[in-house]
Amino acid sequence: MQTSRRALLSAAGAGGLVAGALAGTHPTHAAAPVRRDLRRHAAARLPRSPFTLGVASGDPAPDGFVVWTRLATDPLADDGLGGMPSVRVPVRWEVARDERFRRVVARGTAHAGPESAHAVHVTLRHLEPGREYFYRFAVQRWVSPTGRALTTPRPDQRPASLSMAFASCSNYPAGYFTAYRHLAEERPDLVLHLGDFQYEQAAAANAIGRPHVGPETVTLANYRQRLAQYRTDPDLQAAQAAAPWLVVWDDHEVDNNYADDVPERVAETPGFLDRRAAAYRAYYENMPLRATSVPRGPDLQLYRRVQWGSLATFHMLDTRQHRSDQACGDGFKSCPDADDPSRSLLGAEQERWLADGFARSRARWDLLGQQVFFGRRDNDPGAATTVSMDAWDGYAATRRRVVESWESGRVRNPVVLTGDVHAHWASEVLADWADGDSRVLGSELVTSSITSGGNGYDEPTGTHPWAAWNPNLRFWTNLRGYVRTTITPASLRADFRCVREVTTPGAEVFTRRSYELRDGERGLRQVADSPLPSASLSVRRLPDEEQIIRDTIREETGY
Image (cartoon, rainbow, N blue to C red; front, top):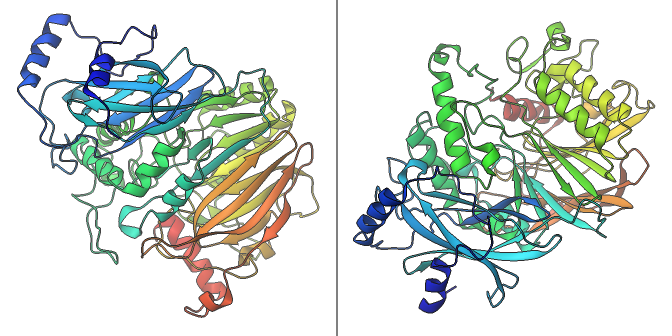
């Protein structure tokens, strides 16, 4: 979208229109060095648009949200700096009530510099609650795409509905990000990304001809380059511009299956915290996070709470940075140490924070936005209990404490939202995981991957073989996609959205199954089912039960 020179000049000089509107991520610099820097930049005119990585918004509140962009004229540059000059660049921004920017309500100037790979975070304040806004950036003669954001309702307001979608696991070489495009077209009010936004592996041959650029990500330059490569994808850009995002990471933003300061490969322990610091810094630079999440060396404050009026509270968790190391190593195992109460997936401080949030909540719906499978998945039909050491099964005492805290806090409608496992699942939280007749204490909705695992497949019954001895498991499909929800005071409806394939672009989207949760009632009610048409299924043979089990373990452990 173009704008007039007069409007841009006005925006450049209007930083005081909204008091305190700008809370940038960069430290304050003395005026004289900034003037010298800008004089140097005046001679460094950008040869092409620096908005190759799109725009995003996130962490909405009743009075505002964060808007983000990162300047890059050569996004895949090996040094991770996006081809930008090594000076601070003035970036004009504006926020309006309409998409044509006829009713601008805030504008100002931020400064993007090489110390943050020319990332810009602007924290808007003093906006109206429960309202839709539009935003954009400009540098020299270049204007960014327009993004859409929303403020949350006031805490005492209960909106009639909230449209929320959640997604995870977008592996660039594994397939096209078509599901992101469909998500964008649905224009939700809010998007949750539950981890594995990017993958750390080195470049390798792949079926669709778009390998990762560069080696396995270890250095700050590696992580900046990799995140830039992902952000060049137009479908991802569309999804991030469509609505505000709440983001949390999982493991691949740093290293597969890492736990706190323990890497996947023990030999890489020396220096791992330096790698984690680089990954966390690049993550912050590339996400629409508030200044409360500015990293401090190898630490970054990621768990946080966002209220959508009195309708819903989102408790966004961090299950990587603070966890105890996996018991008995990674993979599916039978391991008594997994139930050791001294071990924690969240860390003691985050556990206390979550319990306090449950005790204080007066929301109609309390939703945990988190990364790894919450419910039980025992893959052994015999007497042994063999479960994933990387998921909540591997930290059973933490899971019990979390469930007890929402029970003692009298949370009205607890719902766990999960990513990581590259398949859609619906599961119940049971008082006794082995007894299908035991009391239902909550429900879990698990989104499939955007692309990780490549083309998926469907089981017409929607039943995983493990469900025969895991009564909490209600639904499963190995197709790729995301979950769309509609939340009202009376119910939460979840639609498991799927694409038929990811190795060719533009696949259609459809709802494989829908469930409803009703206010005050624990447990999922199936309300719709639409198996993949048999004509499509005949193109490739469905795996048998043994192959389904092998695929599940392989995708989740890397073995």
